[in-house]
Image 1 (cartoon, rainbow, N blue to C red):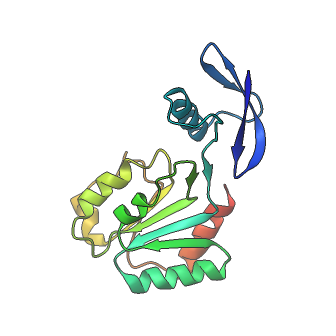
Image 2 (cartoon, rainbow, N blue to C red):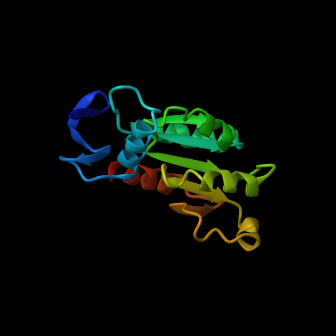
Length: 174
């Protein structure tokens, strides 16, 4: 028995089910496919297995609405789809469908009432989503962010033009 798996509606290959195991015949097995296989075996997926794919968008989360609006405008000008939220928790709450994840989540923790709690929450998502964190220099001495899975940790102030180029380059590399 073979099931089609889809990403964004397009057929991308076949999975073979043999004694309850799924083996992929076309593309290399990724974290997203492993998660989809687990969901299917656990009865969480429908009759047709759909793999998780990256949405063609970037999610911005941060309390500083001026920075968020400027960065969003610059990314839209570069033809990068952007969703913006005030808090990282709010952004993660909108990711209820694990079949469509953003290409990148940028979390600006400047002005956050509890940056440590937000870092802990975001670190749980690093296996599924590439996450870039923006902090103040004051936080640099307080907390070690090594081995928490964040792709990049940046500190304010940022050169917005260079930051937009970095995001664009990262999105094009996927």
